[in-house]
Length: 285
Ligand code: AMP
Image (tube, rainbow, N blue to C red; front, side, top):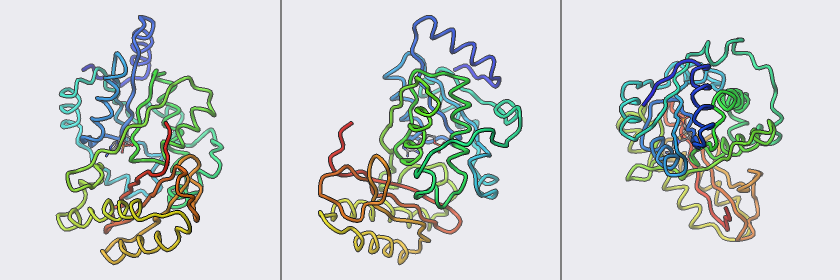
């Protein structure tokens, strides 16, 4: 694996590979890598000729300074995992390389309701920061295919919209959520859970699974209220537990029994905020 820290060097290399007809797959991450990230890389390796991973803890997408300060950093283990997974190129920029003009945004991305719903509501500014960093990364790397995880469902929708807004040619592939054997979605933030919290955290997947198995056509309000309260009774501080339209993320209060939909949750265990989702209905993609 070749490691690049400079924008000009990686841009040059990727352009050269593409000129030779090689297709480049890109997996952007914030490090503290786990099997979820690695599964994206494996998918990328199966669909492209060269795989590129980036590790950059993007300050502009954190709306909470302490979450940023405490974001786990495990670069040596990350590099070993990437080597083992056969990643070809790692981009490891510092903040000056990513934001030579400073952190302040120069563009406001018109994301519409995606920016105010769910994560957008609870993390103001978060998706503008995500767009800022992904736009910059796409400009640097120009990948043929971008691989994202369904774990961050709303982020996938936001980046889909960003790609449209900036008229980028990159194709987006959304990969399934990798889970621990007990169902907990893998996440870098899981490293911050203590042993009791780690056991409790499994409730998120259990409750989401119940929701998608119990849902029937008609009013969904009671089901989501009960599911949120179940998590509260197990010690979570719940930001939201919602059923939403698969495409727009608009809330669904009355489900017709077939429309593609997603049940999403964000909840705190102590200081640690966990998110997860499960899709249901007739999803055609
Ligand atoms: P992050 O490092 O958290 O910014 O995540 C980088 C990429 O990995 C994003 O596209 C995430 O959606 C994806 N990802 C994170 N956790 C998982 C998981 N458990 N399964 C699949 N993809 C994941």
